[in-house]
Each structure stands twice: as C-alpha cells, then as structure tokens.
Length: 419
Ligand SMILES: *Cc1c(COP(=O)(O)O)cnc(C)c1O
Image (cartoon, rainbow, N blue to C red; front, side, top):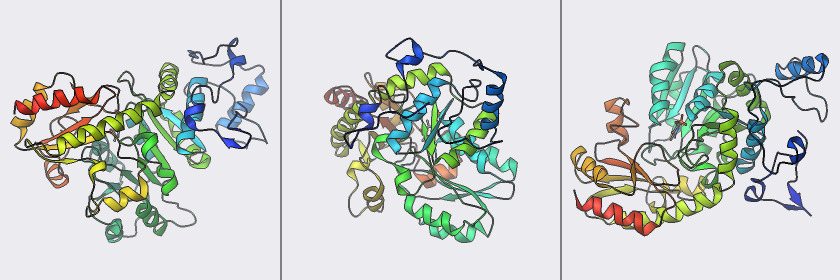
C-alpha cells in the first residue's frame, strides 16, 4: 500500500478528518467508497516468485527495497481490513506502526512474551486490570520471569534495589490504573528503563492506555516505547466487539508482529471492519463522554451516600497525582471510581437499583456501565493487594456513556437513595 493524503497545502490533517478514508483506495474494490470486509483466509500470488518474495519480507530473510511493501499472504499474517485499521490507529498516537489483536489481553500477553527471557524481571504498576494481574501472577512466573510491583504514590526509583542487577524484560504500566484511576509517571518509567538498558538490551516501557483511550493521553510522546489498548473499550466503543491494539516504532512493532503471527493472536477481518466504523466517531463519542462525566462527577462528589470519588478532573494541586496528570494527560476522561459509604451490601443495593446505567463489566462504550471490581473484574486479585490498592467492597466503577447527562444523574440519584 502506497502513500495517502496527510496534508493539504502544508496543513497537516487531523485524525478526525482521516478516519473515513486513510489507508484505503476505492480502486481496490470496484470503486466501493468504504472498504469491504476482506473475508478471506488466504491471498493468491500472481507468480511463485512473488510468493517467495512476500515470504522473504514476512520472515525478515531480506530487507525491503525503497518503496517496497509487504504483500498479502494469509490472514494470520496480514489482511487489508487489519492493515487499513492499523494505519488509521497510528494517527492518534503519532506512531510509526500498529498491530491489532483478538483482544486487549492478546495485545498485552503477545507483547510481554516478545520481551520475556528466563531470569529477567517484569516491573509493573499496580493495581492492574484483573486479566493482566492474573497473567503476571499465575502465568509469567512459570516461565522463570519474576515480577516487581510499583505501587501507587511511590517513586519507581525505589525499585532499583529490587531489580538486583537482573535484566528487565519490560516495564508494564497501566495509567490511569483500572479500577482506581491511580496515576504513574511515564517519564519516570522512561528514566528508570534507561538506567537499566545497555547497548544490547533496551528495556521497553509499555503503557496500557485503555482508560484514557487514544484521545486523552499519548504515552509515546512521554517516553513510552509501546502503547497498548483494549480496543474493546473506547476504540470499539459500542459494546459489540472484543479487540486489542499495540502501537510503537516500526522496529519494535516488527518484533511484536513476529509473535502475533506465530501465536495467532490477530483480530478477524470482520472485527477490523467494525473498528474502522467505530473510529469515524471516536473523537465525537469520547468528547461527549468526557463532558458527561464532568457533569456526573460534580453531582457525585458532594453526595452524602458517597465517601469519596476518584475522577481525574477532580484532582487538586495538593494531590500526589496532580503533577503527573498535568504532565501527561490531555483530559480527565469518563471513568469515575466511587467509594460508597458502607460495604458490599450498600454497593450491591446501589447496583441492583440502577435502571438506565447497565450493570456490566467493560467500559468506554456509548452506554453507561457500572460494576463492582472487588467481586467482578478484580475478583481474582490477591486479597492483600486489593486492600493495599483500594479495591475495597465499597468501590464501584462507573463508565460514562453518551446519554443525556441529566438522565444518568437521575438514575444514579434514585439508586443512591435506595441505599
Ligand atoms: C478490559 C481491559 C483489558 C483487557 O482487554 P480485553 O479486550 O477484555 O481482552 C486490559 N487492560 C485494561 C485496562 C482493561 O480495561
């Protein structure tokens, strides 16, 4: 695939303007304005020589010549719906290359496996999404890789001794953290990674940016090597697909691509097509969600049934996370953590009383969603860790959608009154 329009008369076009067509040419598909779903497992080669050349490039047996691009081979390696989508995703984070996956967990595990070596350590922020926590604490250790937790409110520099001279496989950060909205400094992780890097071992900083999506935080601009997404959330945005994405430099993504090809963790053409459709309204949806969240957070903040809320838009200068927020976030987003007065009984009564806001895990969708992390998404997290990171029985996690904000408030108010 060749070059596509990126600017007009020197004016660089915004991702919002490019989501409808970038990376696709109607002449590939009978003039079809929209990319079809390339629902095929395999692609024909014009000649045996062409097939041989495509494989040479795919397996890194030879370097591409000037202007030469990877040809289509087989849908586990590449497919137009995924390639066009990957091109579009690179625009939001100003990345050289991107890869889409069957799920956010596929993106995280495939990326981690690409850098893990027996005897190495994986440094991670905590808390993490429940699935990532399970991967690190029940799977990674079986491969001879140790994990070191970077806890909220602490400085990563305090972890130099814990590394004890071992090679660091990667630093995996989730900021803001799911489900508490705790923040971690990407710049500090970069400095730490560089201190543990050498000429033959560069420590990658990998940021799970699911909570702020591709609009409200751009980790690559703050020193990260790879930005990851559960594209099931804001990128998909309609609670109708499961997918993941990873973006970074061409060099680092080539390594992750090798693992995706062999592990077979890519997304399907149909999911790729659905995500392209979603990307056309990504910015509109997320802007509305953020506006709504600001209105809802104001209502929740002073409610007598609520002990306190975690919302990035309400951080005060005296909060430890405020400086990190100012340094690396472009907006407060639409995720609100609510610590109710009481415990599980009160939280469940609230959840069971909601009528408009749906009781379901996941987030970032057009409809507002609410769930109870301690017994749901984070049920498998070690009880001591839950306590330490504030994942208590009184916590409910709210994802604000695109509804009328006054209707969301009416529903929340009625349910809070039932406690
Ligand atoms: C949902 C989520 C994941 C997992 O993504 P899936 O698409 O469900 O596999 C990973 N990280 C975070 C922060 C999430 O919220």
